[in-house]
Image (cartoon, rainbow, N blue to C red; front, side, top):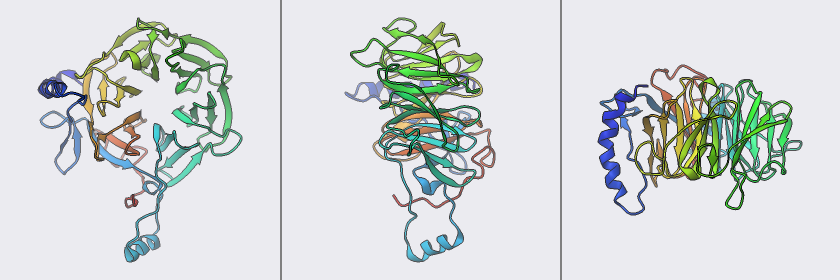
Length: 374
């Protein structure tokens, strides 16, 4: 991505952002969407070169489970909608080869939308490994799933098919769990302890993902470099760089793999490249950084050095593609598709890089199911 290409779009939209800032209580960035040729919704809008296209939304099990011809005929005759198990209060998303894992803070399990197989299942309902309250999740290159169980205050590890493997941490290790990030090889875990108002333990705790041994910590409570105020999430970028959402300080801090502080970017504000309520973070294969902001109702895309490239989405009280009231989770899969969780609208929006054809990647064999009754 070339930031110079976006300067004209950002500069033009900045005037709208300034006017919005004059309205009391308004903290939303203007939408950067427009229908492309053929009716696709693309980002950024013309005349700029599009980078992403809205592809689909996942609301529930009917969006992945294939139906046979008899079921289609019955619904056509009776007029009934498809039954679907919807999301209750989704929080985070992780994806491995077309399997979309979604944590739900109102339910005690992880929902799995297996698009290549056209099936839906759950992880963590039963012992051993019963999940109490899941928040952040991640997967490694083998498809193993790592779940931050807030109530149990540990990290539960499952195979891609849902077999419980082990737990890491426990109540003595965390004040208030927020998220978990695993490196692709499944060797090292980065676990965010958000701390809380009365805690000084605002930090990232680093563990050996296989043995559970504690290796070291990054950060403490504060406002200076390598200090955190209510950290939220971690993403791993190129060369093993760690990008940490420092929520209460309204910035992203960047560290080397060994925890050495490198730099930070972002600040409190309503302008592009600033933050109001940053939540989760993700990276792509090019090293770009994606940050969800629940106040702006969008996600912003930065290069590896923290320079803004573009933003996607708009805060809205009505559901629709790239419309968000309470976005929380974000993930970029192996093919470059971006998955965004909205808790309020109970959905996962999926965006495809324009360079990737709809027939390419791990979602290419997805079921073409009719929308479920909502």
